[in-house]
Each structure stands twice: as C-alpha cells, then as structure tokens.
Image 1 (cartoon, rainbow over the protein chains, first blue to last red):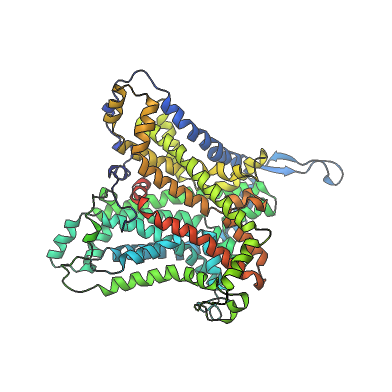
Image 2 (spheres, rainbow over the protein chains, first blue to last red; image 1 turned 90 degrees about the vertical axis):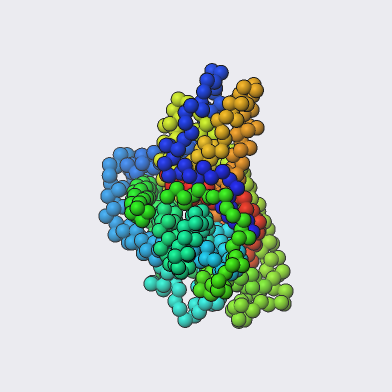
Length: 324
Length: 299
C-alpha cells in the first residue's frame, strides 16, 4: 500500500533542505532573457502583502500595545473617555513579577517534560519497529497509529475527556483520578502525545526508509542482530530527523492551549490561567486588559523563538557528533 | 546526513517481509506496533460504541459493548436538530474555512515559491529571508495580536477574519520555493522561452504542473491546519452561526458541562466530526509527500 512519503517525487527538494541557499541551481541557468519580466514580482506580491498585514503588522501592533496603558480620563468619578498613554515597561513588569505567570510557565514545562520525550521515544520506537524485517501487520498498525492526526486537538480533548471522566470512563476513571492535581499533567500530556505521535512516526519512518539498504545488509552479514542494527545503525543515522521531530514537539508544547482549554469544563484542576497562552486569552478577553495581554504575548513569542533556535542548535550539534 | 531526506527511488514495497526470512515473524516489534495501534484506535472505537447508547446506557452498560436499541439514530437526530440544526451549519463552516483557506493559501504559496525559486529580482533575497524568519514565529501566538489589530478596523466576527490570517503560511512558501528550485528545470523554461512562450505561460503550463506534488501536500497541510484550528476562530468569532466544528463542539461541551443529560449529543458530534475527515485523510494518504516536510524543515 502506498506510504505517506512514498517517493515518486524528485528527491532533490528534500535534499536541498539543510543547506538551502547553497543548493540552489547554478546561476548560469539564468541566461539572457528578453528584458526583465514583472511576473515574479507579481507572483510574490500577494504573499508579501499578506505577510505584512497579518504577521508583521499584528506583531508590531502587539509590541506597541504592550507599551501602552489606559488612563482613565478626568471628569467626576473618572467618567471621561479613557485615553491610551505610554506606560514604558509597566506591562512587562507586571507580567514578569506575577507569580501566576511563572506558575503557568512551570505547568506548561511539566506537560512538555512528560509529553515531548514520550512522543519522541514512542514515534522512534514505532518507526524502527515498522522497518524491522518480518514484523507483521505493518500496514494496518501504521495507519492506526497515524489516525489520531486526523482528529482536531479540541475533539481529541473531548474524546479523552470522556475517557477520563469518572461517569463514562472505560479506563478506570472511577479509581484513578485523571483530573487530580498531579494526574492532570499526565492527562493533558497524553492527549497531546496521542494526537502527534503518528505524524512524527511517519516522518521518522520516511527517514529510516531512505537510508541506504546495503548498510544493513553488510551488518547482517557480519552477524548483527535486528535489534543491534536498529539501535546502532539506524538510530544514529536518523538523528537529524529525530532532532526535527523534537523541534516540532517543543514548539507544539510551548503553544499548549487547545487541550487544557477544552478539558477545563471537566477538570477543576485547570484554571483560566493554567498555561501562558490561556493567560493571554484571559487577559485580553475576560479581564479586558489587552495591554498586559499584548506584553505577555510578546514575551511568549520571544521565548518560543528562543527555544526553537536553542533546540535547533543543540540538535544539530548532537546530529553532527553522531554521524562523525 | 542528507540521506535523511533523499528518498531513494525505493524498491517496491512488496519487498518487505521477504520470503528469505531465516526465522519466523518478529514477535516483539509486531507486539509493540499492535499495542501502539490499540492506544491510538481504542478511544475512537469507544466513541463509536458510545454513540450507539442513550444517556442512561452510557453510564450503566459496559463501556465496550454497543447498544442496539436504536440509540444511535436518536443521538444523531438530536445532534442535527439541536438548536435549529446548528451543527450542520458548523460542519459547513468548517468545510468553507478549510477548503477556501486551503486553496487560496496554496495558490499564494505556490506563486510565491515559484517566483522565489526560479527568479532573481530586486528584493527577492530579502523577501526570502523575511519568510524564513517568519517560519520560526509561532502562528498560534499571533492569533490574539491579529484579533486586536483586526478589531481596531472592525474586521472581526466574519468569515474573512478566520480565513485571511491563515492565507499566508511561511512554511508553505518555503516548501514551494525549495520544490520549485529542484523540480522545474531551467532548461525547460529556457526552451519554452525560445519557443516564444511568455513568462506567464511558462509558469501556468510548465511550472505549476511540475510543482503539483508540492502543491497537493501544501494544500493538505493547510486544510488540516485550518480544520483543526481552534484559537483563531475562538478569538475572532462571537456569532455561533459562523463557528467551525471545533469551536461549536467546545461550546456544546461548555453548555453541557455538568449536565450529564447532554453527553450523548456531544459524543455523537465528536463522532460525526472525526469520521469524514479520517476517511478523507486515509484515502488521500498516497498523495502526501511527507518527505517534503522532513526535508523542508531542516533550515
């Protein structure tokens, strides 16, 4: 059966990935043209305009808002129309000194510490098992493990919500407190892992499948067992792909919002500021303090980009060492 | 390391599980895969079974034994007649958002990717750098700033407010650029020029066709991304006639929160929102080029 990532596609696009710019076709291809053409500019314009309007502008606007606050106008009882005034770093300070912000960040990290390694270990294990010679039911199980990717996060959370809920739980919710103060972290992480493990497995499986076969055949001739081949040869060789999967998972974890928000009506342990993104929402929509919400947003964006770059650098270093 | 994503012209899949096996089936890996499959499928199976039950049966019968007393149709009926049939409206909205946004964003990404991959023009380098930088930005976290800005211009609470912010995906543009570079040969473009084809014709009848595999992948990624999106519609919309399924089901859960009487409706809703997408998805599997993604992400 056709596999995801089954390749009839030209191999090059993928390959040029790592050193993207260097891999561009030699310039010589762009030989004399009949005068300059406007076409590329026209083609790229919609993307640039949309990017400016819906990514750059909101980002800039959020930064601007984050430095403002409302000053209630004069008049009796402060009844005049409130005006926006420059607030300096006040919004940032009030976010950064708020213990609840750090607590939310901590809770997010706990979920990430449970969920990210679990996702990676499971996805890698499944991918390697799929590639074992003589493993059976490969097609069916691969499809089954991939299935949750088709389930939206909100729906997955509702689904698992019923699994956890004592009244309906088929997995011992009457005995195990899935919504307890400790259990909730595992419950939330589980929903996230369930949703993404299949997608990551497929990416890793594609990576394993694209390794040159003669490597394993040589090892096999030398008497290596299937397990040794998987752990000593395949695993190090797919380290770059694992890094990428880790990167995806970390970014996903930092954006944790859908799962806890959806489970909130069921679980008392989840507050309205349970993770940072929920806090931004609460600030902006429940407390109507968009200025502080904007500041928190910006702090989060900076942290996420920072984490992304960090994971990327670390992963690359590991990958380099592994393949040396 | 490049081996990661260089999908060799693979041997036919039938080559797996070869007859030459020295020993029998590998038990351990097969078992691991079965356990993984059960973990992923059982919750969905439970939902299917639960949807056949009335509310009372939900709490009183064994979880994995379906009921055949007609609860299934009753539940579906209750779901689709709930609040004047609003569930159908949500489903339709999801389709509109996902297909509309998916098609448009694929066109935007394909055009930009082709331009950046096959031409050098003033500013093209800077535009590409901007896009690479934007790939790092967490789109979800932009949802609230996007709302704040759009609210300032009174542009929220309509279809456009959900579709417009999702039209440009830096990652999709990046994928298309890389793919265009590799799959649209300069020689063919040059030959078409010599034959007198205009640049537009070359793009339309040569470039876009050669890029089709990337475009399909981008469309599917965008479709799923938009279909699954929750935060953006959550902040942009307050008219429940405009809700997509995710938001509608969430609202249903909030309303029913604590009221056990409504669970069967939510369960039916969850089922109805999973099944069509799962079928669509699994049947489109072979059009997916995940190796594109694995290659593309490695900036």
